[in-house]
Length: 283
Image (tube, rainbow, N blue to C red; front, side, top):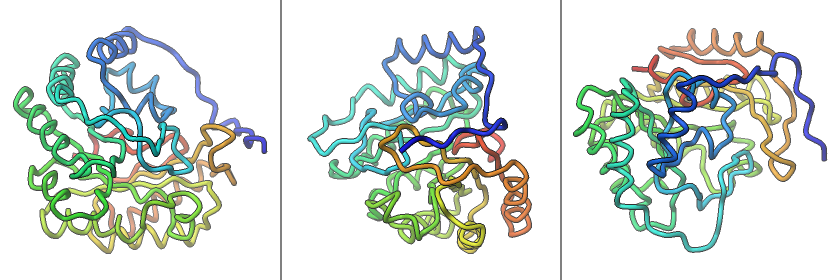
């Protein structure tokens, strides 16, 4: 099956800057992973050129096999996370002189606590070295285990992000190891039990209908979600889930207007929008 040809509005002019080179060098020196590179983010050039990056915790290999994601997956035994990773990320934040940092991770269902201890140590390390930096945590669902969720949420990140990714009718095809209603519950707990500023996101163009997208937005608003990202799904390779359609900029704008009218505080909606795109606007 061929990958659907991109329309003109999805063509991006790439350019490097001194900031891009410096960010790339720093991440390489510290041996860190970024979702920018691991997930083949289309905004890598823009973000690295402005001196920002989204740090990927717990290694670069995931235990789940979502069919939309470019991150490497495996069923083999993985090593425990590096104990040096939290401090290295904290130092990188200092070196990059960030005011706002986004942390995310692969899903590690193989770990006893889902990796939540490493998450907690990273948040603490970043705050210890950078007390004025705001933090967004884009977390996995930790299989809905309350102790693991608590380990992260009780540290009160400035933004708690968890993506629903797509409409519930596509979960079996796209996210077979995830559960739409469990993801909603993660966000509900963050808002109602911990009073956190919450954020979620989804991709479009995988065969969903406009009505299904709006139902997801209504579901998110119904549990108090504050911020939203909507972006175009881009097929990473022939073995990944196919793109069914390219959503026009006009339709993205209509989704943005609908979301704001529904009650979201901040909405990023466009072809190249991703979870951490202009993330500082959510603080």
